[in-house]
Image (cartoon, rainbow, N blue to C red; front, side, top):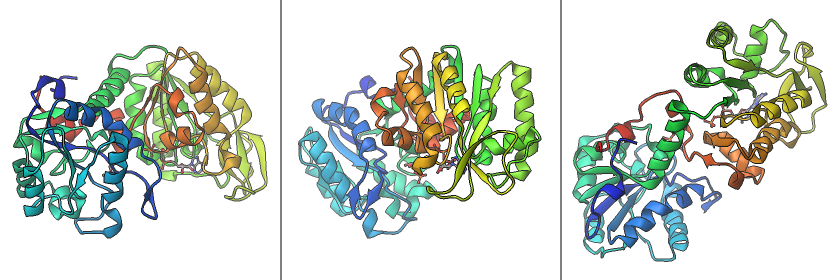
Length: 394
Ligand SMILES: Nc1ncnc2c1ncn2[C@@H]1O[C@H](COP(=O)(O)OP(=O)(O)OP(=O)(O)O)[C@@H](O)[C@H]1O
Ligand SMILES: O=C(O)[C@H](O)COP(=O)(O)O
């Protein structure tokens, strides 16, 4: 990475404004998955050990510029304190007199967590006044919020124009791993693209076709490709207006010599339910009043073989409706194949695929699970992330 990191600057005695992505899933006030908090620990621990006065800032959810009581960061501060094994001070504001006083009270190695930055309308507008107010709290800006790096907001982008600005360890690792995959991949390089909608993955598929040896398609978006091949898809997910685009992707794959893998059989259901009637049918025999909700057993074995023979696999999006056990087999097979393939470096592109790997208990068998959903998608599309661009060059 050509950006400075916390290793390149002196942090001792400095007030460090560290943007993290503590946008964790919550249910009834309790954190249901603290992966993102854990992922930021190396940076926070480094700052503590090196005598910084640590000011953490994050968003949680989408409160749209207003205070939403359920989206306060108190539970996050508590969890962070448990993980660090030391107290974390939490303010009820992210700027203003209460915050200034709390910052003035910090000693070297102390940790303060500000309130949800999205309670302020200026955050998402990247308001220069709010960015300046954040910057006035600190001597140095550290961005470790890879998950929010695709947002040009006051605490992710604006603030970087007012202070020396460097990356934290999580940001560095995400950019290095995903960047290496896209610019200098070990081969054979395979991308697995699933999920619901072609339209959300257009940029990713287009960009990856310039780089991969194998492209595997699964999930709901596969059926627009199946239709493009001239088969009926019954009631399966279909984006009529993307059929031509799907054809053009298959042509591009041929031109580029990319092997393009599509389901050869599927699990169809008579309704969208875990206890629906199901059967396995060849891809050219989907009954008109049934819908395909998972890849079939032959496809699972085919995809497993391709994974086994790959040196690098990037995976984004489930192979079926994995939230329902009946249609989770395809997604589980891909996850297991990645877990088993010792010579295959596996990169999980965040979002639902990361949730699936977690659900199957295979997270620790993957080489890299991105903490970014939208951010990792935009990165894989080849887009510049504003939160990274704004940091100081080496
Ligand atoms: N055959 C299918 N029919 C209908 N829905 C499907 C099918 N296969 C997968 N899905 C659904 O797709 C959803 C995930 O797709 P989506 O595009 O929203 O996210 P994603 O691809 O995981 O992206 P990200 O990883 O960025 O969150 C899942 O909820 C899953 O149930
Ligand atoms: O969950 C995420 O992908 C990040 O925290 C960004 O959240 P956002 O999509 O609400 O900007």
